[in-house]
Length: 426
Image (tube, rainbow, N blue to C red):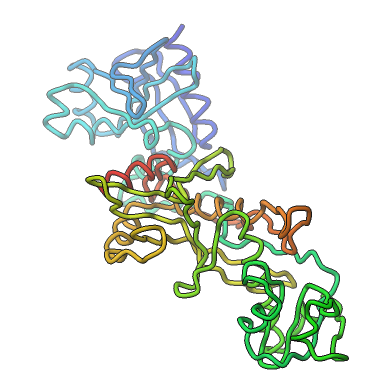
């Protein structure tokens, strides 16, 4: 019954590929054959692959988290190698809906593999389902056949490093000012840059706060305060006004991130997590696409009782406007310091190491992590909401795509990347 269930599972998977399955009733090392069919035209190609099925009820031989092994009889290997048609073996566990495959003629051409009589199946790369369709076509089709199979339709969703930005304000206040820098403006008003919601350019200031407030009296020329609709500054095509509004958005962003101990580094022109007083490691939990994840946003490495380096998660911001919407581009990176403040003299070497081990999922995780930090919309002050509101990373649906499992290795998890980084820096 287990063997029949294995054949039934193969039949189902072959049908899902759009191919034709024919079972054999005489057992001689081949249980059936797959005939290649173009599922776009319905045309069968007279190109076949022989199949040997091996189904188990409970455990595979050499069953591990990553691999499955199976040992075959010598007579069956001789039979497969002596023919002129391609042969695959499919090992399955019908009770868990698992099936893995391998081209045994190619596998047993290796002398060591032939001597062991064992086939090793990768649980990720050798799955027998529709992802194996293209490989089976290439295996079955003679090199000189001249058949053409249209690419399999595949839609794909691309995750960008852009998050949409909404301004939670009805208007922008505009005025003339006798000061010519934000630093001077901040000093007179008595506000730190992380608590300032205004931008200064030469003799002009714009703000999300009412410039008629008495605390602005010394830095705003009387009678010049104007109240503008937000749409004017948000939608303006004037390059000078657009740049001033982006300057205001950046100031608001600094205030927005201040409560999460994320500061803007003027020298490096990026945001980074700053350490607490004890330089303790800090984690940030966030939601990925289908899973929860956690990342060390600040880590201190100690060697021989002394700080070897401190690693800060960071990102370079860039506001842009497209299709009538404001967006923030997140470019993830790192900052290495000696004590949480001073730059590390080996920063270039440390950056090169960590960039070498990080793959797509790790970079994607950083984008989602920063998007999560931005979306925590606690207010500038204890009882107020922030001026800026941020969404999740924007996704774009494409009608065409590539199967990642056919051209790149699977990326490790966030935790695996973090462990690899720790080992690399020992």
